Structures are given as C-alpha cells and as structure tokens.
Image (cartoon, rainbow, N blue to C red; front, top):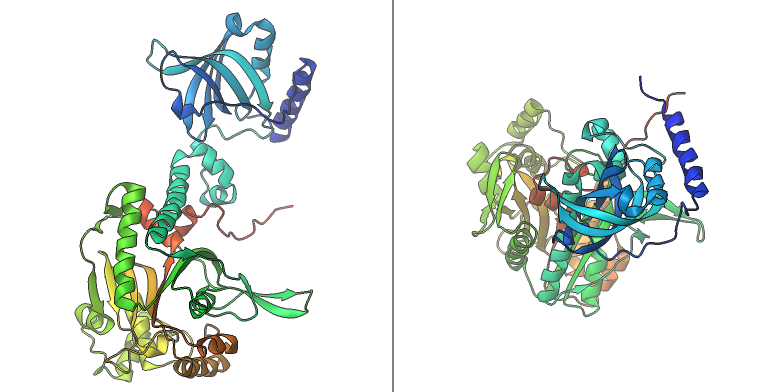
Length: 484
C-alpha cells in the first residue's frame, strides 16, 4: 500500500525547508532562460533551459532527469563531479513535478539520446502534489476535463489539439484580414438577446437594477455596424446558450461570425469554402481530413442541395405532397419532438435534422430552408415560402449556418412579430422583438450576407476529435459531488 497523499505532501514541504537550509531560495521571482528545449538539439551547443521535471533516476553521484517545457522534452545528466558536491545535494531534494533551470552542453549518450550535461542548476519551484506516475494514473475522462492542467502535463496529444485550436483561430484572422475584413467587438452583456433561436442565460445588473442577458449570438450588433458604414466585419465571439450538453454542444462556446455588404448567400458560401480550405491547409498542411472512419476531401467544389432535394434523395419524402398525418407518424415512430410551436415545416425540418444530416459526410451545403425556422433570413428571390439560408455539413455534423440577411425593417418586423407569438405560446427559443435593431435598419442597410461558424466544432473536425470537451481547455462540467 502506498504512502497516503497527506504524508507525501508533508514530505515535500519538509524538503522545501531543507532547500532553504542549503541557502537556496525555494521561490525565485524569475529565471533568465535563453532556449526552448526543442531548439537545442545541436550537439556541442551550450544550452540554458528551464522546465518541469518529468522523471528522475538517481545513481549515486550521477542522476538522469527528463525536463519538459512547452516545446518538448529532453534528458539531463547531472554529475556531482561537474556541478560540485554542495550543488549535488539539491538532487536528493527534487521530485517529479518540480521546476528547475539548468545550463550545460548538449551531447549524445552511448544509447544515442540527445542529453544536456548539466554544469549549473537553479531550483525554481517545488511541486507539492505528486503527479500521477503515468497517463494511466488519470484514467477517468471527467477527471481529465476537470483537471485539464494535469491532462496537459501527462498527455502530449491534448496539447497538440489545443495548439491546433489556437492555430485555427490565427488562420481565421489571417484570412479575413487578407480579404479586407475588420475584426470588431460587440457586447456580451445585453439588454435583449437575439441573433438566433436559443434560450438565453439571464442575469441581473445591480447598478441599474435591470435584467440582462448573456449573448446567444453577436449577429444583431454586427449588423448595426454595417448600418453604421462598415462593409466587411467579423468577430470571434464567446456565446452562451442555456441549453443541453452533448458531444457537440456546450452552453459556453466560440463562434466566428462575418458579414459582408452587397453579398448574398451564394457569395458567403463561396467565401466560407475558401476559408475552411485555407484553415485546413494552414493547420494540417492538407485539405484531406480524417473524421472517424471517413476520409474527407475539402479541395473540390462542395455539393449544394436544397432541403427539399435532400428529403427526396435520402428519405423519399416530397415536401409539398407529404401530408401532416404522414409527418406526425414519422415523428411518433422515431420519437422526435418538434421544438417550439408545431408547424408542418418545423416538423419536416426536425425529421431532416435527425435523419438526413448524419449522412452528409463529404462537404455539403444544404440550402433554401423553410421560412418558419429562419426568422432572420431573407425571403427567397423565387420561392416565397423559402428563405436564402444555408447550412454547411462535414462528417455528418453542422459546422456553419448563414443566409442572405433581411435588411428591410418592414420584413424584419413581420418576422419578429411571428416570433413574439411563438414566445407567448411557450417557445423558449423564439426571438424577442428588438425595437432598437429595427430602428437601426430603418436608417438603411445595404444588401447583406453573413454566417456563423462554430469554432469548437470546426476544431473537432480539423483534429479528428470525438467530443467538444476535448477541444475546449476548460469545458463546463457538472459539479463533483464530495462525499463527507
């Protein structure tokens, strides 16, 4: 049976006092490092590195350690004959997890391993909590997410995923700036939520004694900027929706939205294709992706299919001819629930969303949605019961949603009024009527196209990751129950 944790911690605390007794500062303010570990592989080079001890193997007057920084890991060799017996006393007071800085010469051992022959060593910080010995010491998935810092230390793959996420966001900015877009900021705390059909988080502003909302989307404020004279804007935004958690949804998540004046949904689809290809090439070096068991090719022209055509192709359902009775039978058979107020169009959209979208593996645009489920999308130029809306799918999952925007305050008010009726009828996801936004549109807005792209979900595809929690550094988790 191992030593109890509280005793292990006390042993390490005692070592801190012994370090002090050696005349060593156990908590220095800084260390003048000159190199990252990954950059010092050249033999004969003098190295000055620092990092966390990942393993420690003591052999009398000779000690081997593995040192890790954010760039990689390298072996250290510490000899009492080189550092001196007084300095070598520190070795017996070190533990896995401690931070040190070292200076020395890079060489290769007889076994062929690149190593730093340490000449001087500086103690930087003691780790009181012992690290799990191996990855198998942190097997519980939920514990990994709760203690992401340990997950990052113990599992290099986790850091690789996170690094790709940050690279993805950097690539987005590079692309949008090259296309002449202005990055902007819009409020997270709002008097009125809107921009998508979603249930909001409600809070209270004590200073003004008013109810406020965390944004569900930045859309309506970005459009205000277009009214104000900007023609191309984008924002990488933190959004909040008081809804469910699953493999592809978190209540707090990141989206990138962009809007372009004088553009319609065809232009936005073309630009988004170009953007996602650019991201894949920048982050992965290729436009070929592996998602689960599927090989995805982003390089060609993406398929475009109307939602009516999708229902016919995959389910043999004719949108116009299928009766309400037949639709209800399909819903009952599959135990599907139509969100909000029931309409035939919403029901067919629900069936499509559950049964067809998982089959859209290769990059696909599904276009021309029913007006009932698209309160901010412009009425289709040739189909009065449809809107110029599209969703992009890769690997059977939605990654983006966009449309030709409503810029007429008259049409937008009519849509909002329908949403108000749905809200009063109990549809918690319906959008409220935003008079300030309508007032902005009344000053005139150019033709406009826009889109929202889920950054978390896009990262999942780029990294072939099965859960949204794997691509968010600190995902929302149910509080851990403590047993007293």
